[in-house]
Each structure stands twice: as structure tokens, then as C-alpha cells.
Image (cartoon, rainbow, N blue to C red; front, side, top):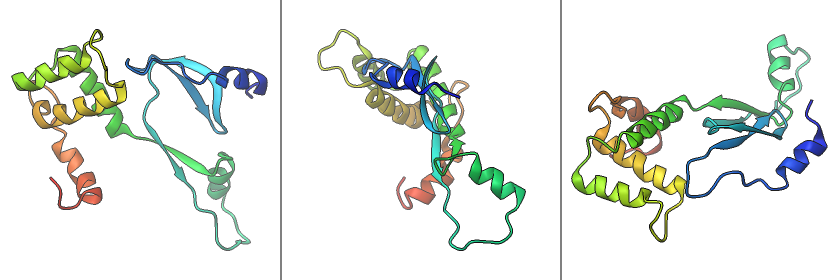
Length: 164
């Protein structure tokens, strides 16, 4: 069990990363929310999916239902976003390798955004989003990188029907 005072002290200043740099640490999230424990590295992407409450009381509850509902007091199920985590890893590798397999203009723009000495730097999350879009449009499927188009096709159709 987490010591509540320790967790509150650790969370008193929740900013543990710089806004312009990749995350280097994260708070551990337990079944009751942030624990106050800090771990090195970036937190993996996961979704907190609400579990709908039963509309009608049943006189019979299976062992599975009990285990599912009683383990998480927040009423949510945590699911890893493995596709996002895999794309993040590959974009990071592509970044470290100098943005290979892109046009000259795209590389120039990416290096400009990444320059730590420039004025008006963009936030890391903004930069990573633009990098991911450029990676998927220009580098995915080339030079040993995964071709993510097929993996993203079904999700894109579900949420962005009719858009390329």
C-alpha cells in the first residue's frame, strides 16, 4: 500500500519533465491514481476505459465478474495502446538516425524544430506529433521501418471515415 503522505508530497509539484524535451521520468499510476512514485523513462501509452455499471442487480455474480469489478476501485479498465507504443519507439529510432528517408525540405523543417538553441521552441508533444505525421507519410515502410499503413487503415476508417 502507498503511504498517502509520501504520495501527496511527491505530487505537490507534479511537473517532473521539461516541456521542450522528451520525458525522462513519470509518476506510477496505480489502481487509485498516481502513487507519488517516480520511475525513469516515458510512461507507456494506455487508455482508461470506463466499465459500465450493471443496470439491474443480478442475484448471481460469477467469479470473473467479481474479480473484474473489485480489482479497480476507479471503475476503469486499463488497456495498453500497443500500436501507439510501437510507433513511438520507431519514431524515436528514426529521430536518432537523423530523420532518414524524407525529403530535403522535411528534414530541414524537422531539424529546425529540434534545434535547442532556437527562439520560440515548440513543445515536445507538438514536435513529436509533427514528426509522427511526417514519419508515417514519408519514411514508414522504407529502409527497414515498419509499413504502418495497413495497421492504421482499420482505425482510420473507424474514426475518420472518408478521409485519407
